[in-house]
Image (tube, rainbow, N blue to C red; front, side, top):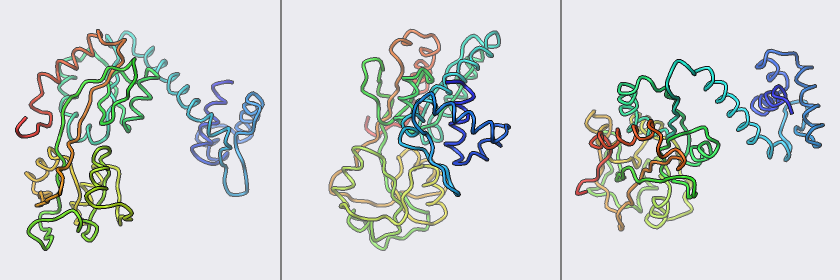
Length: 299
């Protein structure tokens, strides 16, 4: 299995086209076809099905895809690390969820760069399981996640916890003094699942079986939708406080039967890197800048 074959396979899987894959890799389509033929001979199974309109992965191709993607990621990481030698003392990769980057971590990232210009930093954005998987592959040195992995090789430390509140546009009028959970499906409600235990709480308070008119999985998109007057939704309190101070949203009077569960964020890193000076510098930064992390009133 050669590197050119791996790149050809991944390009076709992404573009669903031999022609577009050839254009992406700047080679002739016949070259792409040959590379895939040789790869299929090595694997012993067809990797793609083809018709006049579309190219799709076979079950074997679907099984192979994540492994080849991880292999290519590791190769690129090795190339970049070699290139950086001599320019920086060390290279360090931090992974986090989009909402953590956007609303919590970016000021600390800039502060770390100011304190440690000798470290080449790289950021990766993904869901909690993406961050953990890349950490297992050696591609991430430090992660900030909401759902930590349970693995003997990964250290997990609680970082902060935040409340979840209901917000809407500044001019939103719910028509009642206090919003009970059972009327949420009847309002212009934007649903974002903040994960367990929020999802279990939501099902018990609102019920199951509702098809929400607008469901999102990105905090920034949710904020944009609320700001545009599309409806109301649940946000982490530290985000809501900041946006309310800017006049972008307002917190709404909401009275559930059971309190909304808090959202916990965790710091994760490989235990083998526990004594890394750069990792320790990050932990020290979190301790120094704890006042910038979300705090629940009364803690």
